[in-house]
Length: 136
Image (cartoon, rainbow, N blue to C red; front, side, top):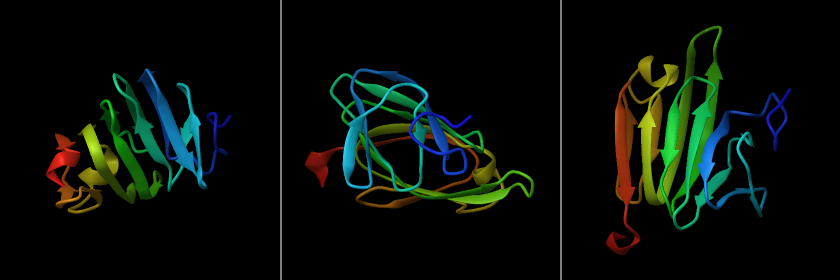
């Protein structure tokens, strides 16, 4: 059964946990979501003030978004049988913490996170990023 918000074949992640106001922009429309919402490529997740969201991807990656964050899922491919894939995302404001999944463990630059100032190539690790709009 697919998670709320997407068909089973399109879901790349699920909002596992959330606090406060969390919205997803998809196909030009922005809507409030709840835990269990299925995320797709091209979705942009927005957290409000004093809000947070925890995302779990199909490769096992965990992404935690802090308050007032804008995080875009640019591309994602994961073949569990072949144990390979790629994952590109971006953060334009706010904070995120990532514990990488199987994609990042399979090779250099298989998982990338873009910020307004740089591109991070993830290599099977944990890290945190903060983008302050005043620094842009």
